[in-house]
Amino acid sequence: MTSERARKTKPRRAAQSAKSHGQFTVQIKRVYEKPSRDDGQRFLVDRLWPRGVAKKDLASVPWLREVAPSAALRKWYGHEPEKWPEFRKRFREELRKNAASWKPLVEAIQKGNVTLLTASRDVEICNATVLKEFLLEKISR
Image (cartoon, rainbow, N blue to C red; front, top):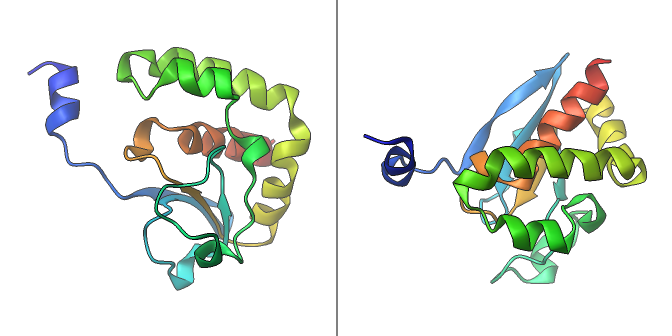
């Protein structure tokens, strides 16, 4: 079975496993999932508002659209699995150039659990996954 075919038949995980930093965790969840007590502070990290979600439903969730990939990068990527390695590289470069966008997340992670919310169907190959990796690298330095 080819990896592309395996990806299509593999069930999509709704929430990506949490990764611990000391006693705190950073996890990724789809914005459509109900909050849980373990979420800690929740942040919406997509550039576009998620379809079908009322603003009042996320009134207490900060929307950090500037930490998401640029519109040009998002459109180029289009969640095509074969573009994932290049997307990761390009998005990490955007993050390096825009420290002000992700600094609030680092501060939140140092205080407690953090959940990155995304509307992406496949959390394993979305911007939130790259962002999580990037943030954990910054904190562990």
